[in-house]
Image (cartoon, rainbow, N blue to C red; front, side, top):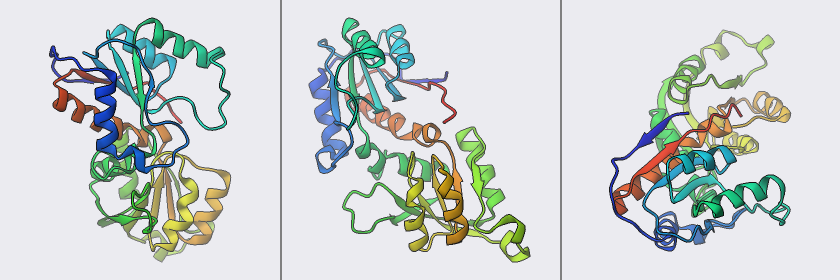
Length: 272
């Protein structure tokens, strides 16, 4: 578990003030999402310390309690569409711990994917040394997928960079059937890349339609392998969790500077 903490200060704000700022900064109202964005659990006390993380799992809550945090900010919160409503079992334990310790929980899903500065895509593009050039779906006013350009590089070069910045080796599916690959395909250079973090593997067809040489996301399905080969586009599955650490950390930095509050990112290890 790694931490990145700002210096300790003594300011405080309400959960509502924090949420209002983040709502406006991320243009949260512009999105039709799979879960509510913003304040999901109100801990009922002023916020002086904040913990950020990718997912509001029980381990993150326990870490926030140990850090004496008053609020948790995450990318993956609660109350997803199709999720059972009763606060029982695992869900009940999580919410009960938050309430018992007076910890507010704030979550942003698609707004944190799409933001052009602190968004997961923008942050991943930045650490990979690429330049964002447009939207994967040009008609979207707040695109959740992007296109980036990079210095022409081989797939091995890109694998090396991804491994260095994310701390894990991506699963790479070649644009060509390996047993039919010729010298030309092996020397193919990647210059234009589609990127959508998390579970966006099915956007690979759109990336190919937009002329991308490669597509980067977090997860992979059985069908993704065939899509990459038949569409002639390299695919890199880099981990849902790994590709979505950047956005919440960047948002935490913005909040820390805005409100002069200590904000600690806690990385709960997740290989998926």
